[in-house]
Amino acid sequence: MRLNRRRLLGSMAALGAAATLPATARAQDSIWDMFARDRVMRNIDTGANTAYANARVETIEPILSFDTAYNLSVAISRYEPFVAAGGWEQVPREVFGLKLGDSRRAVRTLKFRLMASGDMKPAERANDMFDEELDRAVRGFQVRHGLTADGQVGEATFYALSVPAHERLNQLRLNLARVEASAATLGDRYAVVNIPAATIEAVEGGQVSQRHTAVVGRIDRQTPILSSRIHQINFNPYWHVPKSIIQKDLIKYMNEDPEYLTKFRIRIYDGNGRELQPTQIDWSTNEAVNYMFRQEPGAENSMGHVKINFHNPHAVYLHDTPTKSLFAENARFHSSGCVRVDGVNQFVAWILRDNGGWDTEIVDGMFASNERLDVDVKAPVPIHTTYITAWANRQGTVSFRDDVYQFDAEGRVTFA
Image (tube, rainbow, N blue to C red):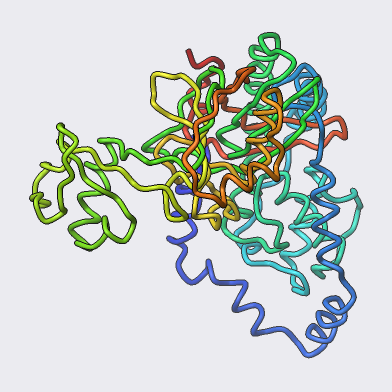
């Protein structure tokens, strides 16, 4: 039976009071433990530890490339004998909640687990203090798994620690097949949306020119796997609300707040282009799906200041967003299939490179103006949305992401 976060956390909840053991243990700390913890806390630069962790995963190699395929092969060759020898031990629930300065037996267990996965230097012995070395190792583990590097063994970190080594090996093998299937089809310049990582790469000359955090489709409204070309940029666009969102979301919002459309500057039009008022619609029914809903350009527009178009049968696109806070989350699966782009001004300038005159400063000026403008891309940029949950870089660092859409569980290599 494959491990998943819901099953794991459900079993923890069933344990009741035992799941809160770290807090109980803290109450039993001696005064000497407190002195030791204070000494540790005073002398550690956690910011430097996070920077070290980030440096381990940094790479110019595109996730879809023969370089990444080679790096995955090397990682597999390391994991295979390790898994054959039994892999790492399952972490006990006592490591849940551990953080810098804690002192108890579970800390030693956590250290040996991170030694086994290469996040700490191997040693025959380990003490019970959550010290600087362990803080650096936990942050490194978190960055490798796409988690916020806070150095604490929270829910998401505990789940990632609990995935068995043989499942990680299977993940590496499956994703090697995916990367190899795609790498040969790519040109010199393209963009890649990696859905499980919720990231975007702008690739040029075999190297990543830009990398952006993204928000992608949630599990019940998935971002589709596709290949297309970015052909047009819409500055300060109108947002025409899709019928699916009208039916699933907008009607509900209007029943909760009759002023919702007014607050977010969304207008209603019938089939003849005549504007209607919200009071003219029966919100207790599905009548609203018969009309067109259009949000005006501006700061509250759901697409932000720009929409990035590419032909596809799913009516999805890339866009800006007014809810920038989502980019700071671990699990960025919130959209209805479209993809929101952090630092979108830089990405748009990169797309429009061959148009001439479109640097980041000019793009920012267009955003600030709220002026409606459509720009055709003179050299349409290939774009690929893909599903890679494991990869490695030339430094030997292996990264993993959750199988959010369960494509790994299904063993899917291709998605046509």
